[in-house]
Image 1 (cartoon, rainbow, N blue to C red):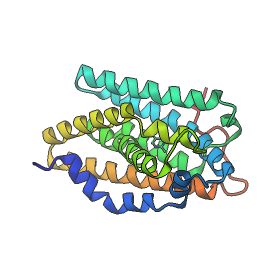
Image 2 (image 1 turned 90 degrees about the horizontal axis):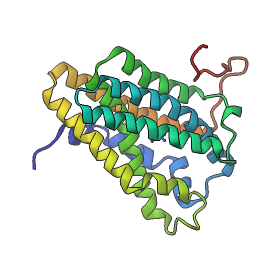
Image 3 (image 1 turned 120 degrees about the vertical axis):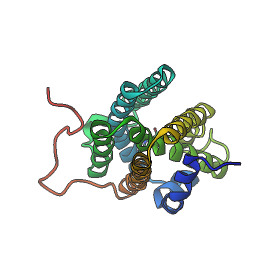
Image 4 (image 1 turned 60 degrees about the vertical axis):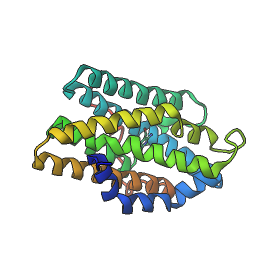
Amino acid sequence: MTTTFCDELWTATAEIRAAIDKLPFVIALGDGTLDREKFVYYLAQDAHYLRGYARALASAAAKADRPQDIAFFAKSAHDAVVVESSLHESNVVDVDAWTPSPTGTGYTSYLLSVAHTQGYPELTAAVLPCFWIYAEVGRALLELAGDLTTHPYGDWIGTYADEEFEAATEHARQIVNRLADQADPATRARMRTAFTTASTWEWMFWDAAWRMESWPVGAAPVQVSEPAK
Ligand SMILES: Cc1ncc(CO)c(N)n1
C-alpha cells in the first residue's frame, strides 16, 4: 500500500493526538464524569467556534477547483451552522450569554487567516483536523462509553461517532490527498503546517474548556465573533 499525504499528516501529528486522548476533558467526557458546568462552557464555546469554522468552510467552497468540492464544502458549512443552531435552540446552553474564549477566538481567527491569506490546498489542510480529530475522538469515546442512551454525554458522542461524519471526513481526506499530489513542495510544506497547527488548536480548545478559560480582567471583548455592522 502506498503512503498518502494524509497518512503522512496523521503520522506527523501522532504526538499531539496522543496528548488529546489523555486530556482530562476528553477522558471525563468519555467516562461521563465531566462536570456539567464544564460541558455547558464547552458547548457555548463550540457554538461560537462553529460560526467561524462555517465561514472558513464557505471560503473553501468559494476557492474549490471542482463543482463536487464546492458542494462538499458548502454542505459542510451548512451542517456546521445546523449544529450551531441546534445548540442555540436547545435549552441546555445560552450561547449568547458567553463571550468567545481567547482560545476559541484564536482558533477561528487562525482558520480565517488561512482562508484569507493562503490558497485552497492550505485551507483544506487547515480544516481537515476539525473533521478527522473529531471523528477519531468520537470513535474512541464510543468504544469506552458503552450504552449511549444512558450516558450523560451520549448525544455528543453519537454526533461525532456517526457514519455520516466519518464519510465527510473521508471525503475531506480525498480532497487533501488530490491537492497535495498536484502541489509543489512549498505548498505541501504549508499544508503540513496548516494541518499541524489546527491539530494543536484542537488540543488547546479542549484544554481551555477544562480550565473554563476566560479573558484577563478588564480585557474581555464584546461579541468578537460577529463582524462589524
Ligand atoms: C473545536 C471543534 N473542532 C471540530 C469540530 C467538529 O465539527 C467541532 N465541533 N469543534
